Amino acid sequence: MNLHEWAIGGVYLGPLFVYGVLALLLTALSLWLLQRSGLGRHLWHGALFGCALFVLWLAGIVAVLAT
Image 1 (cartoon, rainbow, N blue to C red):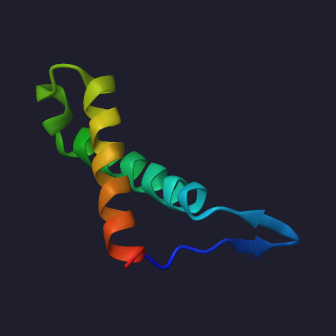
Image 2: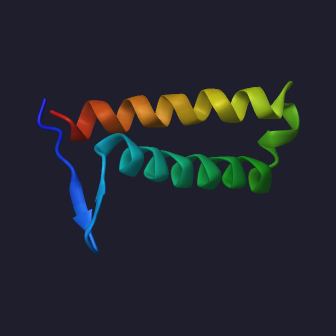
Image 3: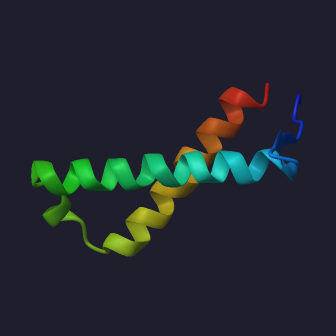
């Protein structure tokens, strides 16, 4: 795996932190799109779905960017 730190303004950020922020943004966008389309009302437990969606986005990002 080719994981390395990023230096932004002299602050070193680990790859998992950067991937987590990206996954959080994609999760928020996905949940917003679900609510706007009306499919969000069919979710049984919104917080649990949001957490699972975040984990899926994070796993996908790590799988794609860390190789």
